[in-house]
Image (cartoon, rainbow, N blue to C red):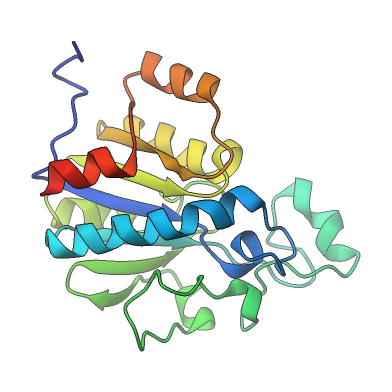
Length: 212
């Protein structure tokens, strides 16, 4: 039986979707993976279910300047050598089709000032300046406004931004659910390790059933 202090509450949960941008998801992207493309349809279904349940959704995305000066050290050489990766204003920096409500237009430059773009009363897009969706963003405050004590986390890539966001969420004393089939790069061992520290691991269908 799961510890009652970590058991998710689906009546007061929010969905956080991480880095589902063309450069990370689509085959033409500069840092794409087959796993990220594979999780896209299920992630879209999960988002639609949260909308129907009138629960808060946060999309956290990353931008890198072409010169690499804002990048993590492990990615600076890649960018300094002329490669592009989620550069503001490019196709690669856009979110993959189907994730946002139709007709949504994002101003990449405006997002970098730090304020979230509210695409509806219960859905926002954030720019995150590093791995975690909580680092120097307003995500915590938006979750408080939404009265969310549980965060459901999906996106790409597990070893980088997704894992850091999960651990930061637990540091904020939030109940956390990792969506097993909506996280690119996650393994069975990763799931077992997350469960050891109190993070629930569920499939998209299991979560959608709870929302219904």
